Length: 275
Image 1 (cartoon, one colour):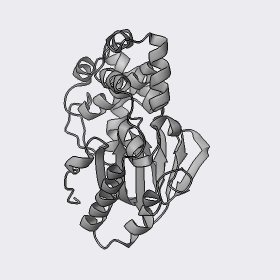
Image 2 (cartoon, helix red, strand yellow; image 1 turned 60 degrees about the vertical axis):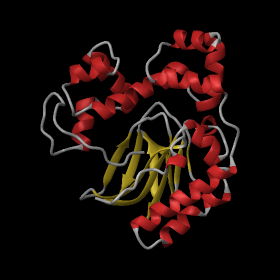
Image 3 (cartoon, helix red, strand yellow; image 1 turned 60 degrees about the horizontal axis):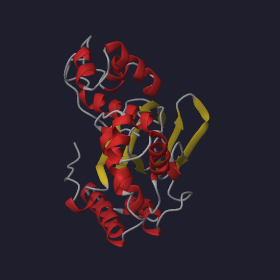
Image 4 (cartoon, one colour; image 1 turned 135 degrees about the horizontal axis):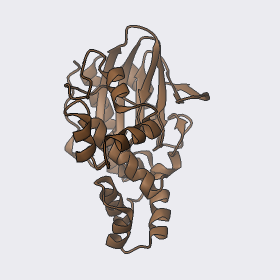
């Protein structure tokens, strides 16, 4: 295990997770990356990271950084049997402050720090990270770089009512209820949410629910996961996973944790890096 200090307090509004990884898969293959409500920034070491949208080999993108916005389908992370690097999950506000642009600009995109219009300090980070001598030094370098960007202010923060709407959608409040809470029509809410994250409110909410289920899978039977995460039933959970993740929850557990044998998904589980 790589020692991972917590994300510094000054960055927690902007960075949900900052995960150094050193994974030996045993053989070349493809790792499934699930949709999320955060912007994903991966800084690989040793070799370029090769990522495509699942089932779309024409979208394959390889570089020494990987930046992707919100999306409603799985990614395919191609590897030669091992991967090392640092992965970050940025909040929507973090996209504005650290990247200098709304997450909607990156929605559905697979790009990198050289192609994207981002601050110079970020574009220089992959090379500086590669020169760092240890994992603590790499993590500290990432934290210093992001803290410097945060101190600069970045882009303007999302409108308060939009930020509140996204927070309510994340915890499962119905779209009509969210619109009423923030004082917008459903149509106006949809326009503002798309402008911020690139997804319609309902689509954003489905992905948020998938994230919650992903964190819960492996800790209790699938029927209970469905109930606590807001699905109508276990069949609804399975349908949504097929639509958004490209597999069933049980298949995902088997991919992520092949040594956990449990027919209903109630075995123990952890989490490794994902795109």
